[in-house]
Amino acid sequence: MVSQLPAQSAHLVKLAPSGQLAVAVVSNLQRSRSSSGRRGLVSILLSSDLGTYIRRLLARVAEKACAILRPYLGLGYREVSVSPDMADRLAVLSRKTLVLDLDETLVHSCYLDPDTHDNVGCSQLPDHAQPDYVLNVSIDPMVEPIVFRVFKRPHVDEFLDCVSKWYDLVIYTASLEVYATQVVDLLDAGQGRMSRRFYRQHCRASSPLVSKDLSLVTPDMTGVLIIDNSPYAYRDFPDNAVPIKTFIYDPDDTELLKLLPFLDALRFTKDVRSILGRRVIRQHDNRSTISSHR
Image 1 (tube, rainbow, N blue to C red):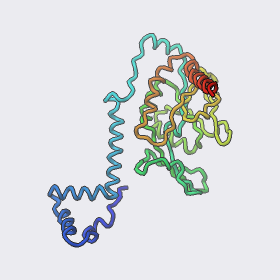
Image 2: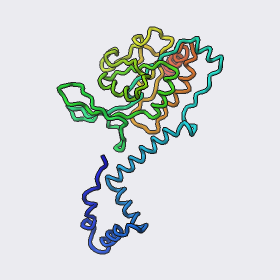
Image 3: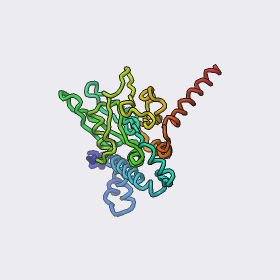
Image 4: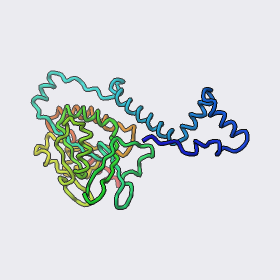
């Protein structure tokens, strides 16, 4: 809803001090056709609640326009044409499965706790942040629905469009099903790309953290990989993991775009662990080096 102008702006004459300044303010408002009058009115509008709304709206429009124009400006990911030899290789290999975490990987959500009235997950968000989705989630039928504000990670739509061509997509989240289902449905936009979903009840509980069992997704560990911001989530499958930075709110975030070239190439491997496992070996070697120097 558009915010109304503050009541005091309609009584600007009464608020201004007596004398020439008051006359000048009234004169500026009356001379609407003059350039100085227009500048005065614009200044008043931009300093008001309506001005704040307009600035936020323009920022959102600019962000959406950039997202649409990005591929045409050469800023998005350009998929390389597959040669006949590589196409033959893909035909021999089984199509792999890409497991995607939800919160802090694809989106960030915050909400008002109905019991404590604390804003959970909102402390690091700027005041001008506008959610992509607002959801009413009924977790307890005896309690009023909880309002979730959901912020999409930049480029998530382009990311999902690309990886859905290369992999079978699976959502695996530690969030409650009643909440996550709504978010994934909105991200999927009726395209059926993420029909397989695993929720908190499918995680291995180890208070206060949970880990994810990839064997529930597929018994073949050679062709499954998970993208998750929490290392604990894939602690039992480190050779199948692709780490990603935690997302809270950053309009300039490009982490999903950065992964596209790597994911494009990884689908040509016979066993993803032969590539992803090298990160684990390197981390182990680095820790050993640090320990030897202590």
